[in-house]
Amino acid sequence: MIIATTDYVPGKQIKEYIGFVQGNTVQSKHIGKDIMAGLKTIVGGEIKAYTEMMDEARKIAIERMINEAKRQGANAVIGVRVATAAIMANTSEILAYGTAVIVE
Picture 1 (cartoon, rainbow, N blue to C red):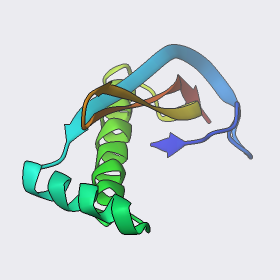
Picture 2: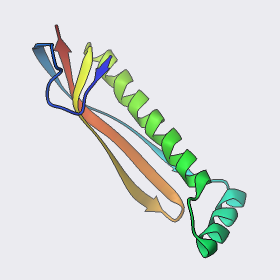
Picture 3: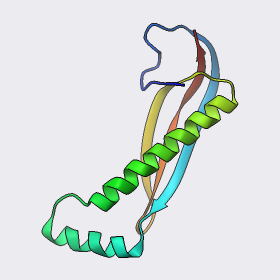
């Protein structure tokens, strides 16, 4: 599966537009790690537990988007974007989306 943030794939021709595909996940951290992250905000610096959580969430969302594109017969997804939103305290949604296409 080719994934591109551009609206085309260099060196390939789009033969068919299949349509919008997306994948998402909502993640939260364990309460113990949440307490440690709260303490980290006092002294400053990167909160690695949250960095790791968001990285994992991004990977899950992108994988779900790819699986949806495959189910629809695509071999590429163009115009890929990733968005995040706070759902409730200490939880975040990651959404990956783009346009499924067939390229040659």
